[in-house]
Image (cartoon, rainbow, N blue to C red; front, side):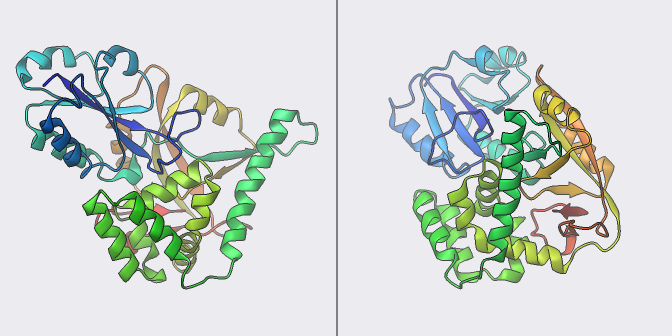
Length: 338
């Protein structure tokens, strides 16, 4: 078996390549020069699908120097028979999370690295920016239109009358998508049988298809998927309203940003900035810094600590809440959400 490099890609961000049928934020890309040659490799692919939700395979393995600096590449795992021989060259690449001789070891590592995904600081922020100025050029006008569309579309969904069968279309789609993934399919069926509106935050904070698919749909503004999630978005919003903070609060979020993204935010001082997705934050500054400092950076990115002063007394502020008592066991203590 040739050296097989598995790379964890984040797909679906603006400007990145993604397949139309890939609703996932994370994809696992397997590079192996003999990927289809043996029954062993086909068995490995089946096992990989138990720890990831979108697997892509390629045969060109001589790409490490070219792909390492791409922001879409989050983690690299090396699976080889000769661990000692390969450990030396892998030290040159900071995104390589380990060199493994056994399939069990690499599967365990990939699975553990996907835990706590809500605080993955290298997932791009989904923001819209509004410039309140009468003398606007065409590009600025288009950005303002996107801002308004994002805000209005969610408001419309929240005002729609709910229907007990609203979730059926989403469940049908997920059953088809995960038909080859027994673990995730079991969660879909559990959601179908046991979900109730007062459990929305618990389900959102669980490591499952709901968080991954909803956040990506919101981030890339996939209107069709957002519509399928309308009942779930409405239930989350209602729970946040029921448990919303009543006094001002300061929260933190560590975020890895490209130099271009950071420049856009710096140039937007004094403008309205809207988050297009739900945002998880921490009350504890040190906790946010721990997540931030544990992330690898490349030449075109920077670590940024975002400090948010949220005041519920201001007009038009959407509800935000400390969800510590309403989260699943996968969530973090002292977590707030908007």
